[in-house]
Length: 375
Image 1: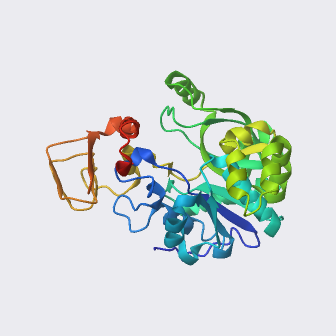
Image 2 (image 1 turned 45 degrees about the horizontal axis):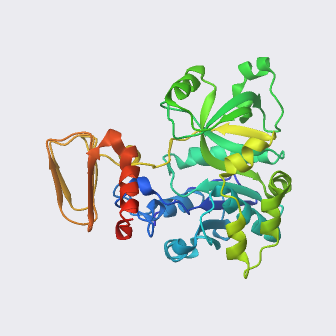
Image 3 (image 1 turned 120 degrees about the vertical axis):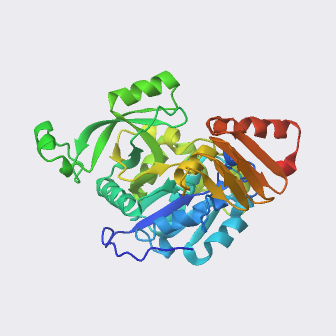
């Protein structure tokens, strides 16, 4: 696994635990991503490291190994431990997938028992972030606001009217003490602003609404990266979601499976973030992608001179802007463009790049046919 040795004093004296969520299914990267080995456990685009390993490496200057935790599904626990080894201190295993709110809350409650005065950095294991130093600066800015008892989310500058992401409407500029900057002062010294208040959250919009959001210039994508003080979060979460909090607080190893099944399956955004007024947003200083499709794989990883992302035993000729990935047979393409070709030992996917979101139709077909070996 590649690691960075760059010295970084941004987090000197900070007590930050990085909580990495890696329980997703990653079905849109079928046939490579499967239920038993979803995308966060894959090395994509010719990389030696998996997405999970890269995510851990990304926080090496933020949290030492003893303060890195991951939350994963029970059936993926062995794989998670195999890939992380001594790179993390704790692997929290969910008995069943219940979305991100129970996962985050479970980690927060366990951290409350161990280090209640800590700060939590919550992030996903399947993101592609190109500039790690800029990522660190963004997290540092978020920690400043979290120290003022705010719940901080990271926003991404939209590059197209995406309908698959939530949006954040940012408001007034905030300095590192979470004080609102007067308009005159902000115009003179905008660098003093480390973040913004949040006016509203908008869940996945239709295309027309997404276009309108971008035109206003006041909306960011919600990256699913959060920073807050552990104790402040748990106190607020217990108030907003008292039933879920009570179940988690009373959970024992013997009752965990049955208790966890009682938790409502909700994303942390809807269950918590959108229900509290003490929220701030820090605009990302880094390039970001959630690697949610084969089209995204081409954007996120190294390309040849013709814009192709190639991995495995493959040959391309007169091929442009395509993804060619094989973990099975030799694959060759000639005279094609904007194409995705993915081959595994038991399945082959061929489609135009702009149809990447339609992979879910294949998953539905396989589920209906009960072809579980291909899922």
